Image 1 (cartoon, one colour):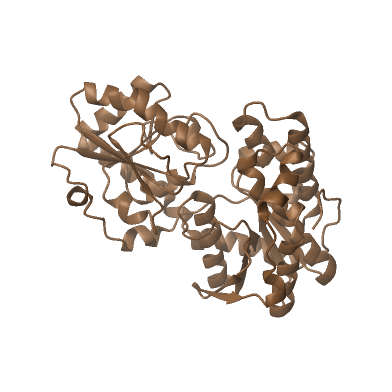
Image 2 (cartoon, rainbow, N blue to C red; image 1 turned 180 degrees about the vertical axis):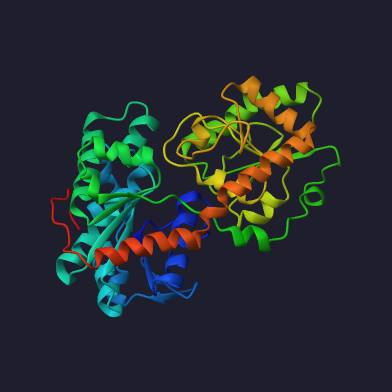
Length: 405
C-alpha cells in the first residue's frame, strides 16, 4: 500500500481508513507493507499487528519538500493539497515502493489517492503484478467544489492526472456509487470501477472505555457534551466550527441549554471562535471521547467525499444531527439513522430536541449502530481481498497515466 504520510496518529478519516484496511487485509489476505510518504521507514502488518522497518540509508535521502511542492503549485494545485501530489514530481516514493516490493515479493499494489498510484504503476512495470487505486473521493471534483477560484490549469492538471491513473490501473475502488458515477461520466471503463464502502472499527468502540470528560473539563451535571472531529487545516471543517459559533450555539443557548462542543483533531486554530467550543488537538483514538459525549454534530456545508466521521458516530451509538452535505455518500434516512438540518436554526432546534428527548435520541443512535454493523473493517477488507485475488487471475491493464514516478 502506498499513500500519504500523515497516517499516525489515525485521527482523521483517510488515516483511519488506510490503517484499518491494512489491518484487515493482513488478517484475511496476507502481510501488508504500508509505504507512507516519509523517509524513516515503512510499516508491516501481519495478522493485525503493526511494526515499523527502517529503509536503508540510500532511501532516506532528504530533499526540501518546499521545493517539490512549489513545482506542484505551479501546476495550479492549492498549497494545502500539494502534499497529495508529491509522487508526480518526486522520484523517492517510487524508489521506496520498489525496494519494499522486491524485498518482500509483493506483487499486489494498492494506492490511496491518485498520485500515489504512480509509484505502484512503476512497480508493476518493473516487477509485474496488479495495481488498485482506492479513491477516498474523486479528488479533482472535490477540489473544484471546495476551492473557490481554482485556476483552470489546476483543474486540468488534477483531472488529467486522476483520469489517466484510473485508466492505467487494473481496478479503481470508489467508496460510493455517486463517486463511481462521476468517474464513469468522465470515461473510465465501467468494468474497471468497483464500489466498496468505507468501514468502521466496531471493536474499537465495543472495547473502549469513555473518558471522564465532565471531571476533566469541570462541567456541571447540566452541561451536555457535543462532539465533532476532523483536521482543521481542512477549510470545510474549520468553517463548520465557525458556523456553530456564529449561528448554532447561540440558538442553542437561547433555548436555555448549556452545551460544550469538543472539536477533536489536529491543526486546531490558534483561538477558538466560541468559549463553548474546545479544540483538543490530536488524540490517539477518538473512541473514548465519542463514548463520553451526548450527541454528534456534522454542520458541514462544503467539501467532498464520504463522511467517515459519521460512521464513527454511529459505531459509538451517538445520535447525529447533520446537514445533507455532512452525510453525503452514505445511504441513510432523515429521522431514522440521523436527523437532517440544513438551516442553522433548524440545526439548533434538532440538537435541543434530541437532548431533551433521550428516548428519541437513543432510538436514532440504535438505528445508526445497526446501519454500521455490516461495515466492520474486517468485512470490508474481505471485499478488497476478493478483488485483489481476482486481479491475480487476469492480465494487467495497460493505459496511459499522467505524471512521472
